[in-house]
Image (cartoon, rainbow, N blue to C red; front, side):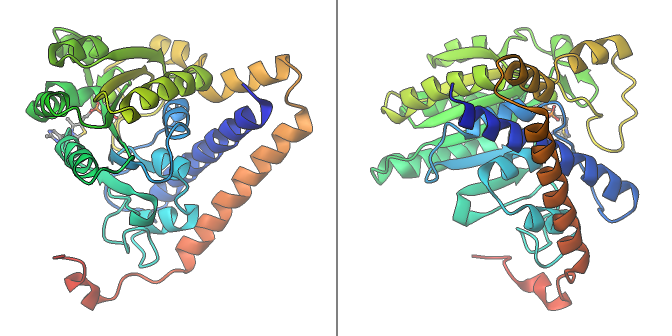
Length: 317
Ligand SMILES: Cc1ncc(C[n+]2csc(CCOP(=O)(O)OP(=O)(O)O)c2C)c(N)n1
Ligand SMILES: [Mg+2]
């Protein structure tokens, strides 16, 4: 894979990591209200898959979506302002962390209901097929979604109608405090696709190159009109489910094992070993992430809250 692409992956992952660390800090300082679910540890998954899309493709995702939004190119300042509940936020300050939205980027949110985005993704795919558009839909969900009725309804309908959906399960092994193996008879999510005659693959979600390559193949299949595909990326969230989670349901040893496979470190080491990344280049990327996030916070701080009359705006369309 060429150096420019790998450096771009590193740049995006560093930005997401810094954005999330700063979000945690802003939450602790009372600047961000409501829920806050961090993407730290899972960066390679979103970055690798979203890089395989075209701008006209749709994305429907979950509440753990800051990284997806950044990888899609939503404005970092407008995302941070949304977390702060400000009028300049991507959802005008009325969505918050779980409801990032940008129609100009075909980024249709941010769903707080587990599996709730799946039927909507299938609907967007049906619209694209009906209108003869070449675009596809990326639908991102967690391992917690796979025992919801909507998962099965969405996969079945997408397969019956050969709809252009790439289902991406970010399997981080836990749904809140519940380990997937405790609640799923078939904990390998990709195997479930066979029940709906959907081709599927499992990929190492910590390896951005592997994710990108798997996503490219999956996207090609979906775009060709042969119907949906299910990609399962096995990954790990390094922090709690949300900021309110003391993480009492897994061992510190398990966490350390996964942190040894930090997606950013894996890519950094690979690039350095191949002589494709120098110390000053890395420092420049880190400084850029720091600067972009600092500017995003300054923008969010300086922005006004939505005025009271905005309560009645954007309610019905
Ligand atoms: C239908 C529904 N049931 C329960 C919840 C409460 N809830 C919020 S997040 C979550 C866990 C989902 O885990 P997963 O899909 O694996 O995503 P992750 O948080 O690991 O990214 C649950 C049960 C919800 N939001 N929606
Ligand atoms: Mg999960």
